[in-house]
Image (cartoon, rainbow, N blue to C red; front, side):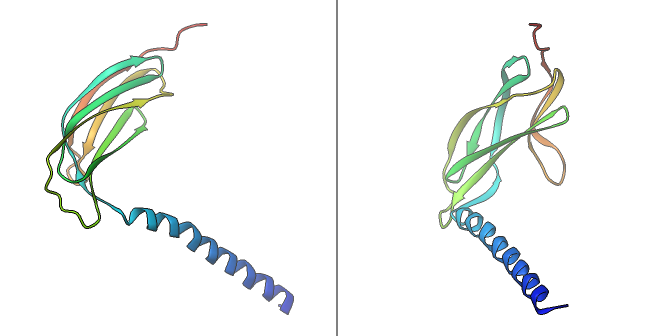
Length: 141
């Protein structure tokens, strides 16, 4: 292998190394302020509206830390909702706050869906579940 080839091989390896650290630095700096503690307690979940390819689900409950963070995603015919109890680094979780949040899902294919809220990672039991939520067919144009 010539010196010229070795130089470009080392330069490429250095570029990959630098890009890996550059991508990781902002994520670790932003995540250092908040700590996801556990699932917030969801007391109610209900469908607020459905339409062609869309549904809005309202979740209500309480959290004990500084705030509640929400995440919703679709996998197959199941809508997953996660509500996390989040604290700011250095704070204690000694609050008792209520939350209400509407989460909208769009671009869904028509059919029956199940909604699962705060699925337990070990037991796979949800805090709340809604079955047979019907997403209607898109209207003809």
